[in-house]
Image (cartoon, rainbow, N blue to C red; front, side, top):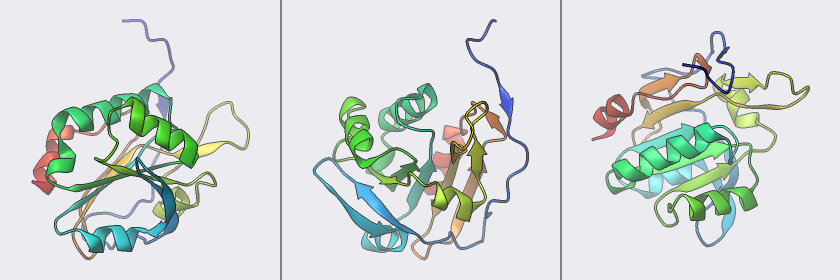
Length: 171
């Protein structure tokens, strides 16, 4: 099968793993109505149950569209707090939530400087785009004190999580 894109090896990541505490951060958190600065710790603490933190490519890229369609279709927000994070702006996030029919279901952190991906050890320097980076695809399932119960980090681009394994971790 001929691909319309190159598969890129991302090399090793220095991401936190199962049993580690997920690094806290504060960034604009976008929902279907507005956005405001929020800390991951606040998001985890305000809801009972697990939090699924999804790092994804910039909004509009086919992997982001595919991941969010899959999460929507599987109904993850019914059983967990689902939040995403990318380098996209709050405006782009609002558009993604509307276009993917996720408004009111999930929220998205905006991190244009990619500092959160750096803190998590999952920076992806975009091939052929000098000075442009984004988080590599990753999923972390967190308990109510930010302890990582499940971790997956992409080793190539594009790469997608094992959705069944993620569901098993939070359901």
